[in-house]
Length: 145
Image (cartoon, rainbow, N blue to C red; front, side):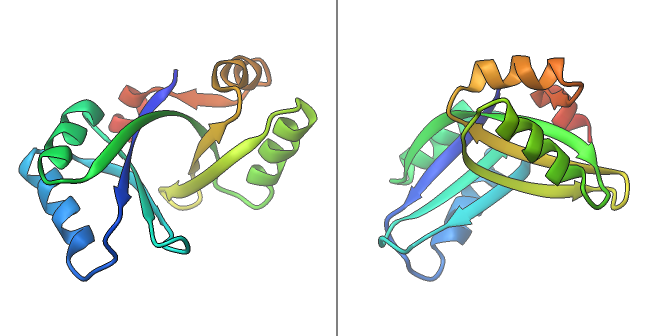
């Protein structure tokens, strides 16, 4: 139930750089399901995206000169209500997992929150989350939202 996430390294912090990434993905017919942009505190930005075909998107971006990598993340659906994320985070902490990073979005406000986790031990985290009753989404389920 791991989901492939494409990480794009943005070495150039200049106008139009992010637009070139988005245009390249559009040309390839990539649907951006989620994204997170961090940096450039170190002069390097990291754009993390989940698209419908990460390997093909990565290849297209490398042709444009971008460095890319594919990581595996865990997508967890939670109720979109106060305290739902806190409950999930408390469970994760009690189970001893380290969260390397997290980003989220609301799907149909008031219905479902979608949380994208990068864990220190991805496969183990999936097993524990499933055992704890959390809804871990596949890429197909994410595409269907």
